[in-house]
Length: 320
Image (tube, rainbow, N blue to C red; front, side):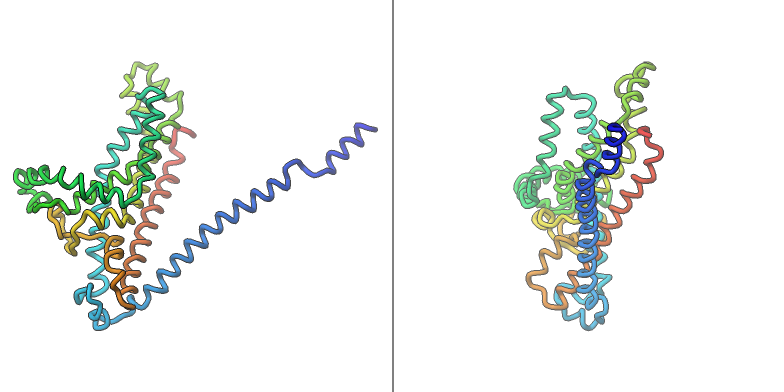
């Protein structure tokens, strides 16, 4: 009877941790809802402030000095082109470097060296963007100037490399600075994906006589393909919104071309907002916020594409 009574007492009592679970569930749900609400508020603010510019006539926009008599679409298009071009250059440089660094840390370096390198790469993410801008302005531009001149002299028959004029305040230098800035987030993501490769897959490949590189090509890279793509998209989202570094190393222009070595050809949306906003009037501020809305939608689309890639590749992952 005592045992029965004891068991009834246990059944009737509160489950251990019920209050803690409820609190944790509430805090987690509130945090998730807060993020969605904040995102919605940012989007609503951008739309609200962009409406006057979107509805303004060509004559009203002509009073905005920095638009140079262009329509809103004609003003945003070169900025969007420069933003995407600098980000693509950054990805072309950063992604192969990130894959190589991640492979070295995860599969080649000794354990102590790998930890130190991992911390060193992660520390790059803590450096303010203005420091990267100063580095690009004072160190990188004089360093790459002779290389750009050589490319223009010997490969100028290719349009991207023609017409270099010093100093190297062009979209290529901005892309290189952005590549260094997005290197930590891409490397860290790819490194963690590579470390999650099933050990049995690696051992099976080695047991069949594969070398370490063949094992990486057969087991690690296929497993991490979706992670590499997602990391690249995250890095691109970071590069699309960079402001100060691009503003400091790039001579602005509003052309839509692939002359990546010529200064005064391109400009990014974020750098243009920072450059023009202090002197913008009421409608001018609305125009700049409208360009910010376009950048917001572009960044959101990039991150949405990264999430789609993750979900699409999840069922094919070797971890399953």
